[in-house]
Amino acid sequence: MLKVNEYFEGQVKSIAFHNEEGDATLGVMEPGTYEFNTTAIEYMTIISGAVSVLLPHFAEYQLFHKGDIFTVPANSTFKIEVLEVTAYLCIYR
Image 1 (spheres, one colour):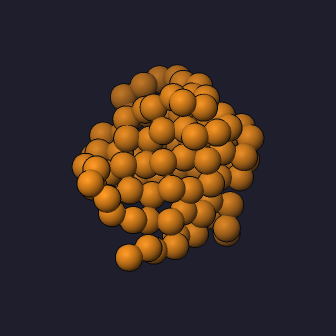
Image 2 (cartoon, rainbow, N blue to C red):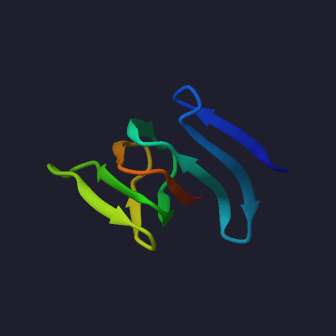
């Protein structure tokens, strides 16, 4: 079953689903700065666009573009600065 999610007054939207890789979301983010909390490990693939991410235990933001993947630990908080409209795939484990 698909579930539609909307965050930050519609600036971030995603569709949640389950497949052979596990739980996942496919979404789009408008430019802006957002903070998210995790409950599971998240593997985020940037499909298009560009983001700058402040991951837990890092002092500086890291830049990610189309095709890049970053991992966010479970039970943590991360900040993401969306530099242009960005599509992503997030797998949760």
